[in-house]
Amino acid sequence: MGILGVPMSFVLTALKQVLFQKACEAQNSGDRLLPLYTKITLGLFALGLVPSAVLFIWSPQLFSWVFGSQWHTAGEYSRSLIVWLMFVFCNTPAVLFARIIRIQRFAFFYELCLLAIRVMALALGGLYLDASRTIVLFSLVGAATNVILILIVGYAVMKKEGHAGVCSK
Image: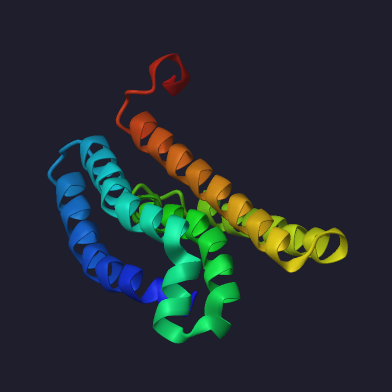
């Protein structure tokens, strides 16, 4: 994950500081947070889509070309992990906005459940699957849980702003 995570970390480190400040300013001035949340989340998705697609398609070949033929298997594994990492990249606004709208309790229980689900995926994969399929399972579980986090925090922002329809009462 280190090779794949470095460019992602570079972009997200700068974004986190700016986004947190902008979101806090918006909240303190009474502006709506949902448009900012949606814009940044979708923007990150758009920004990560092409590199993720390229890595998903050509990762084994790229790893072999850059690092040598012995890295082909690592490229296969990174192909699987890129699905998860794409949604890790997109969940940055969800993590920040959870703090801003003060749903840290939810975030804490989400992290506990996430840990349990990941451990189960790795344990089941270790018992019943080979390494490649275990990594695919772990990646799909990670992608799904990140999408769920993005949707739940988006709904919480909507609800806080009074735009969740009947459910906001």
